[in-house]
Amino acid sequence: MASSPQTYDNIIIGSGMGGLTTAALLAQAGQRTLLCESHSIAGGAAHSFKRDGFTFDSGPSFYCGLADPHSCNPLTQVLAQLGETLEAVPYDPLGHYHFPDRTIPIYCKLKDYRAALAEVTPKGAEEFQRFEQKMLHLYRGLQGLPLTELRGDWKLFPMLMSRYPQEMLKLGTRLPLVQASVGKIMDATIQDPWVRRLIDLECFLLSGLKAHGTVAPEVAFMLGERDTTPIDYPIGGSGAIVDALVRAFERHGGELRLSSHVAQIQLDQRKATGVVLKSGEEIQARRVISNATLWDTYGQLLPKGSLAPSYQEAQEATPVVESFMHLHLGIRADGLERLTGHHVVVHDDQLDVTTPGNTCMISIPSVWDSALAPAGHHVVHSYTLEPFEGWTRDGDYEAKKQAKAETLYRALERVIPDIRDRITTNLVGTPLTHARYLRRHKGTYGPAIAAGQGHFPSPKTPIKNLYRVGDSTLPGIGVPAVVASGIMCANMLKD
Image (tube, rainbow, N blue to C red; front, side):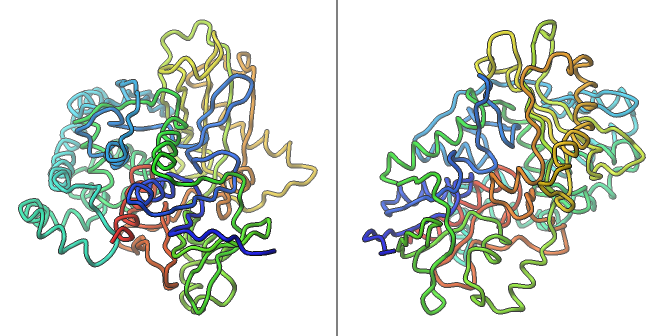
């Protein structure tokens, strides 16, 4: 098929939060940018979809500081830079954690969080305060740095030193904490086994890893933002965030193509020159930016032999966080007037919180935004880790789906005991669903790069003019992190 006559400054593969952020910022800088999305809906893992009058979040449901101009959330800062705002509903407590023997509210304000812990273990609450103080010390060191000026190359450090010398000096005194794992700080401050398990759970919800595998700045940011900015939910669901980024991108002249699957990145003498779509169309660009995972970028999108075998093997050997089972439910809401929106259920204290099926996350966002469900109903999203291996679309697929979803139904019964009798819409997703719609390697949540055992790579790749963004690049997993990766990549390419 003939090549497209159009040539772009940038082609971005994938419209996840990282890809959308990069695209919008480059378009704002005046660069001609095309964003190709395989799915019929933009947003990647953060897209929303509609079914039977319900609006479902496909993935993330926990946000903070969306409507607070003083928030350190990179998403809030980049939306402000792009001239976009979001309407959001604040709430507290941020959720309830249900253990086999008790339920505990998790408050945003740390003094209230500690008070809830003290009802379970007074000594543990005192120890948590020492842990908290170390984390807030690190958070205050990070607060002074402007996230919208981050970049993923050697120019970052000189830029920060020249523009923000006092802030860098303050951060320098906290360098041991910047490089530490949460587990190391926990070991130095907390002995209470119940609180240690709680911190492991908080880390797992944040990074997919327990405390010893999670980097300290990630939890410092989490606790600091909870304490200083509202925990809020966007009106319209996660799709409202996606819509805001798309609006900004298109307002600045960007072009979004949905249902446009990129089959391969084109190279000329080890330099990225464009892409080939599944349809056969060839599109040229000065740069290609992949929002696909590192496994998909290096193992699927690049022509075979593009990378040195040792490099490719090392990248593809990066450990992965498991995929998920999902339940998307529409339920009758009668008698549930006091229902809260976020819940985490741990079924068995004797099993690790990372054991697939043991820890189940629940979001009921229609508690805050009733327009997400028909009148008299709620929308429910529940999910848990589930390995990709062993899943095939054979004759047993439907039965296996229902059997594996049982742990999610049981978790929901901790919150709404008669939920099975309330269901009007019932959608079950598996790792195959995750992989199919999100085009993610084995439907994974992202890399399992443990603190001290490796680093998330920068946006640069060994291929000239090929860059990467998203949750398998620095700074890692989660909406704030992937937005930061987009900021870092865009700032490198504006020069």
